Length: 284
Image (tube, rainbow, N blue to C red):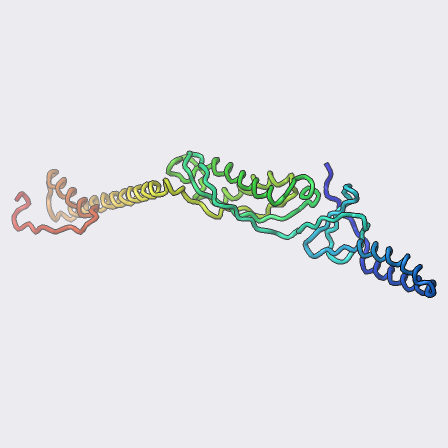
């Protein structure tokens, strides 16, 4: 398999200057026979002009001589090459590609919508020109394929797989790194350098989004209730200890249980409590 070969082309300015000198000499020698001048200068002018090559910054020209790869010119400026060489102009600039939102299944089988942003540029002009049919279309297809593989390798979140160390919705750096490596491996054959790859959009598919939102809300409520109960138990224990320490009132086990029950209702309830004033004894 061939690889990119960088060649140095002759200066186009020197070639234009040489053509001008040859034209003046020819005109001086054959000034009385204009048909000889035309016969010599016109073909020469065509060859000189056809061999001129302009390469803009961050661009390259791939040279082909009757189907044979002769090299690539990646310096910018005006050059002169074999006028019979064909040229393929390739941009070396960094470019963005944002994939469409595609529906895939995560590791747990849940349908999700995902899209990615890829920053890439051509690294090897030979591979980009001849190893793949159309490298821009190749990038789109292989990026979608890499995204599908990535989504199937990790769960969306920890709700479905509590033992997962990496999830799509939380470990962005790890997921983006894995995505970048996967795409880079696929782009190697096309001579494409992956500068950056990251997830641009991630969400559950519409058909399960509402159910997953309710599940997340329920999990949040359970976690909040657990925290409230944990705090309430500590407050009740502190209250009973303080009453016993200061000997404010002596409570039997039954009254302690009643007090604990009332305090837990007050502290853990999600509505404001209505106080009841007891004007009798504790046993009434």
